[in-house]
Length: 513
Image (spheres, rainbow, N blue to C red):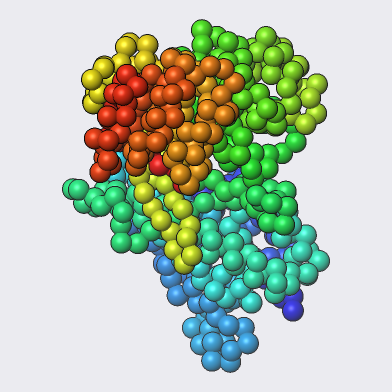
């Protein structure tokens, strides 16, 4: 049942649209209450509005910390209209009903994002009265309309004008409020949690995550699955990527593009990465991006068809011309020149994304039945060859060392069990996602489009048996990088020595499930 709006309380930090909204309410005969800056703005605009301190008979105190925390405000919001006892008390205590509450909150998230923010400044931007009014109004949604999002003003006004705000509408607005205040509280909790201990625990006893929906996707991994994209509070990211050309990204596009971009950032020089089904199928660096892309595509041109390509440098027209000779789903780069974009726009099924990836998030999450697994992100790298321990009779040559380090960077981004064959600056063959490591070796050999003789092999985890080493040695692999740590390390090292291979161990594992 729709209820008439007779009195509204407006107290907003974000004042976009509030003047027009308030003026429209006043024209409908709605009495307006307001506080602080909102009151001053409405008064300046000639709108008939009563200041809350005059309404309650109690002044704002303590530097504005206490404004609306008063029985006449919260009684007017929380009183049930169909409860005789509530109504008797409201009449006896002279507490008129408040039918509409329009509130948005101090910008805590924006405040703490400032590099120079102090703790005192952050604390003062924790809103108290705002969330309290919002939660009160949302709890009593059957009788009170609550608005937290300025984007809802126009729709709400139309429904108020038509006396058509249903209980379902009110419930939807209340749900939006509780989602908003939960996110707000989670942000405050997270910020204070990082400050409250001299040595704060990385993984606290409780974990509260807050993400805001950006868009509904066409479908998920498969067409029968629904999906959406949410954003965190971290600046940048896919929610803020710029789509330069093409239809909207799919769930799988986002997964592959994120994987490709992360791998491209492993390299300092110009790098090209092609990903298919969340595994790299081509990776290369070069003097130019064009050279890198050609070598990356050459690693597995069949798999590259319909893939996602990421670059760590701006794309120019010569590279765009080469890319468009093969069907690609998505192109991701820090920027694209106007000339290159014109070439891409000739491909109607291609998506072109301008994306500057933020720093790696420190924590990874994975949902499991009834819970959530949390871990550090895998940001471990080898800083130089000095961190590799030579375990064979023969030490690697400088070129073999360079090839091993290249393969090691790629291996970290390949699904386990992972094997990567590479030269000094491009991948030759990849074996991914196998239950047996020796199978991954054989697949990498089978996928190789050029000779593997003289190349390096990286393995994301130790070799449990010597069979993978023997296969690689017979194929002409001359250097191996792997974590080590198997009970059969001695046997594996002997196998490498028997093929005159150089082998180094890193003591770092790069499983990716």
